[in-house]
Length: 81
Image (tube, rainbow, N blue to C red; front, top):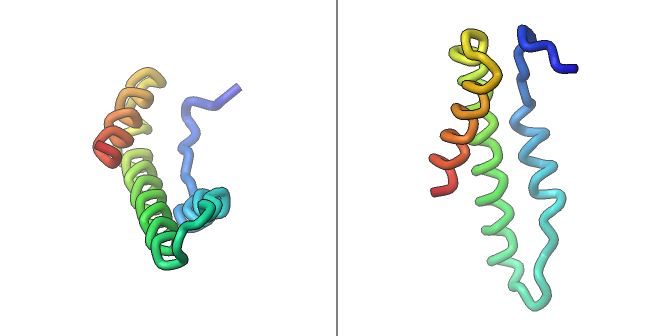
């Protein structure tokens, strides 16, 4: 069971490294293209977690669980659309 009063803080660097760690080089992909893709994934993951942590510090403490889900969905949509 999750304690609704406890803040969730994610380490941005660890999260971003885990994201790129699972991103394999595609067959016949040039090194330069792969590195650019890795960098893009790393930065997007880093910024997404930083946004999440900022929301957690500023707004999540006051929100209910359903409001948290709505805010997180908006953050994700903003980053990827």
